[in-house]
Length: 73
Image (cartoon, rainbow, N blue to C red; front, side, top):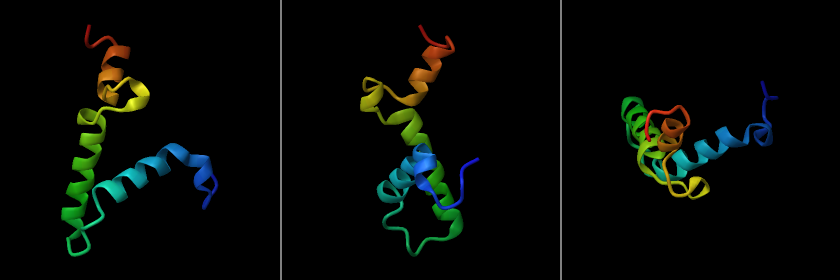
């Protein structure tokens, strides 16, 4: 558990929060809680299943996980 108020101790989660907030939620001021929740759900799906990441050789996180646990050749 990290100390409250110190984003440096939780850099991975803070990076994901920033990506979602600035990439998908920048224009949702007039949306309901349910609409914003759906946008967050969609953003996390795209981030993990669709968007290639430079740090893992332009693969998606799910491709890397699948390879690691032997689900794909």
